[in-house]
Length: 225
Image 1 (cartoon, rainbow, N blue to C red):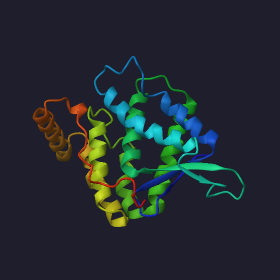
Image 2 (cartoon, rainbow, N blue to C red):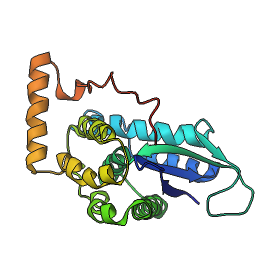
Image 3 (cartoon, helix red, strand yellow):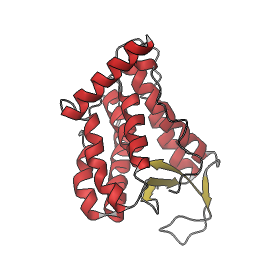
Image 4 (cartoon, rainbow, N blue to C red):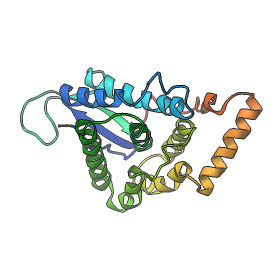
C-alpha cells in the first residue's frame, strides 16, 4: 500500500510503495492530464504542465530511479519499496489540479479510492511532522487552493521557491499556509500575484503561461530535505 511520511527537515514528503502501488497511482494520474481534447481549453494546458512534473516523479520512483528500501517503514516483511521526495507545495498544488481535472473526466471507484488514500496519508504526514502547523495546512488539500487558476503552474513554482528559501524546519512549515494564500481565489495575495504576472508578461511580450520562474541561483540539486 502507498504511504507518505514527512521529510526530516520538513520541506516535503516521501511517498513510498511497491512497484505495483506506485504504478497504479501513476496510471490514475495519467487519466486526468494530457487529454488532446482539452489541451486547447483555457487552463488545462497550464494544469497539465504542473501535473506532468508530479507524474514524472511518481514514474521515476516506480522505475527505481529515486529512493529504495528493502521493506516498508511500517512492515517487517522483506519487500522492495520505491519512493521519491516531493515538496509540500508541489504535492498540494498537483493534487488540486488533478482533482479539478477529474471533474471533467469519467472516473471510477478505484480512481477516487486512490485520491482518498493519498489525501489520508498526506494529512497523516502533516500531523506527524507538526500538529500545530498541520491544523492550518490541512484545509489546503480540501479545495483550499483554486484548481481553476489559469496560471496554477506559475503560482506553484513561485510559492515553492519562497517556501524553500525559508530553509525548512517547523518554523518554515508554520509559515506555509500564509504563502499558499497566493493560490487561494480572491485573496489579496492571489490578486497581487495575478497583477505581477500580467505586468511581467507585458514587459516580456509573451503569454503568462509562457513565463518561467527566475530561480537559476537556487540550488535545487542539493536541497536538504
